[in-house]
Image 1 (tube, rainbow, N blue to C red):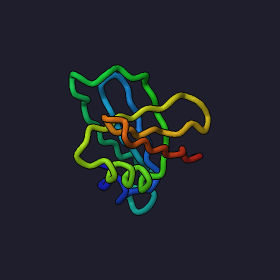
Image 2 (image 1 turned 180 degrees about the vertical axis):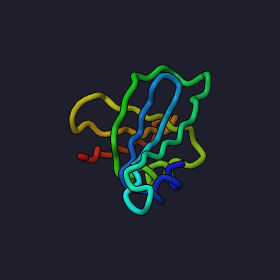
Image 3 (image 1 turned 120 degrees about the horizontal axis):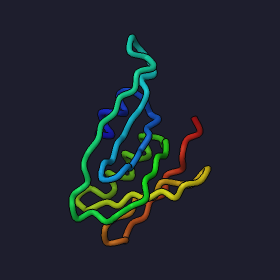
Image 4 (image 1 turned 135 degrees about the horizontal axis):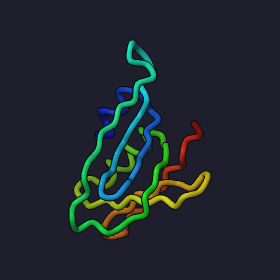
Length: 104
């Protein structure tokens, strides 16, 4: 999903609402400029509860963080607040990556 969104724009908004994780961006060039692209996935039934969040990050940094954790379950968390990073955490807690939000 992240790689497809990077074709459109580097600023990605990662949102979690209920059991739905969404990644969205705004088309920055071409005839569809200004339109929003959204891709969503449903979290598995055994996923732990997480407070809803929405944060805009550099999509390439997000992609790089996920690439470091290929083959493992990944946990995302974000504490509401201005300037609070998105945390990407491996399931076994060996790796923790912080991605600072973009100001848009």
